[in-house]
Image (cartoon, rainbow, N blue to C red; front, top):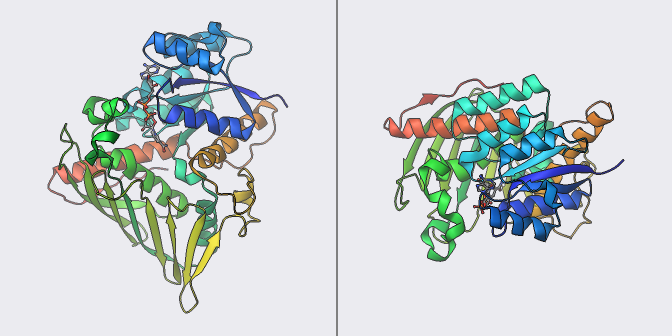
Length: 380
Ligand SMILES: NC(=O)c1ccc[n+]([C@@H]2O[C@H](COP(=O)([O-])OP(=O)(O)OC[C@H]3O[C@@H](n4cnc5c(N)ncnc54)[C@H](O)[C@@H]3O)[C@@H](O)[C@H]2O)c1
């Protein structure tokens, strides 16, 4: 089977996540980059395309032009990878869906809830595939954790404690030119810490457990954010099952780089995972010694086997987590192209993205109304 073809919107010279997406796709070996609109600044767009060896006839001034012209080509791209600032996600994704092109979009899906559900409806009506890159779901040990929880090994989940502290907003060196849009509400959205990193926690807990959020109480604070967006948030959740959760997000927690950590407690034990040590999963079962599971030794699972295979002891990292997501997504497209039944979808989709946007808005609403409980809508 030939490789699929893809294009990218964003990810020009100097961008953060675009090159990570490209490295990840290239690791899968299943798709090649052939088109792009890498920057809104056309000089930079051309410079980026040259460095990437893109045929100049497939370098576009705007994403609208790219979506329309690619759709008309016989050898059109199979999917687009959207890695632009948050405020553009909706328009770019909509444009490609309307032109019949599958979409991968980074988080958060959109700024507004209504736009997120417009994309959900568009995906349904076009029968196209849509992945939202909630990176951490790609890690093998997160998939292992999902299997452990599903198997009932830790019993019925009773409470979740998750934190995602960073310190970048405190540090003048990390607030460079490239991060300028993140400091502006119209580009970033209604929330900074919950929108940027809290959404990752929500997606992970939803992926790992069957818990459905029932209501949320949040206290968002702004200590230093220039546009008075939250840079620290404490969130309490109740789930339908009666379980409860406690999430913390911060961009001003001195000493923390990207310290996402999850602990899920059940009636028979608990699991614990840290993003900065992603190849390790801690399992505690009542009355038994603590087990530390390492990627590569704890394999033989359907979920993990769909990931790229790195031998044990060769750490899987951030790029590989993206690559695992892309690998599953591309597999679905390849099978669809061949008219074969879909392999199991092993990636976050547009509905997961819409639930994430709803989560962010619910936290903001709770906090703005004096940190009261707000019911969370049913999203299935
Ligand atoms: N999943 C993750 O772990 C993760 C990590 C970092 C960032 N992100 C998300 O990725 C997105 C991009 O973040 P980033 O840090 O790479 O930002 P960035 O500012 O480093 O890069 C954005 C890129 O988009 C380009 N761009 C802006 N407007 C454009 C337009 N109209 N047309 C074409 N290109 C345009 C810019 O020139 C730049 O190349 C954000 O939504 C962010 O939330 C996700």
